[in-house]
Length: 121
Image (tube, rainbow, N blue to C red; front, side, top):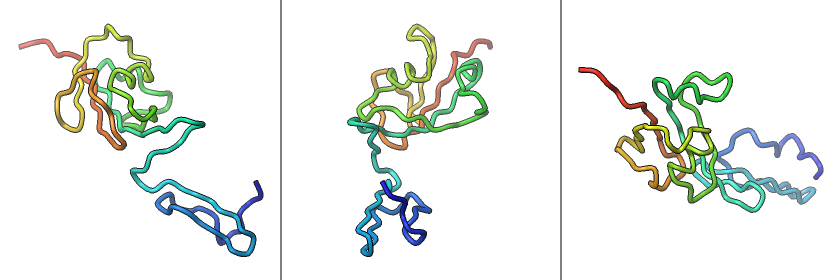
């Protein structure tokens, strides 16, 4: 695909479509909250925060909340698989500020907090 002229380069992902009439080139960009396509599959991005010993599953170079991309229609369990957290791991899931099960569906922009169980008293 030929390069876009300078006036048509994408500088922000909130636009939907750019058309340059002089050469007929079209570039599309994702609007905030819009699903993306990876090959033939739609994906969504979720915000993930890992606490306590679950922080060992953070991607290299990341030291806090981060965005993860998963296929549209994914559940918390699918996200855990994508992160690399074993299915038998005992943890608490917060989804958009509420307790959630592993079978809870995810949506674009969801806030997922993963916490290890606490002990003490």
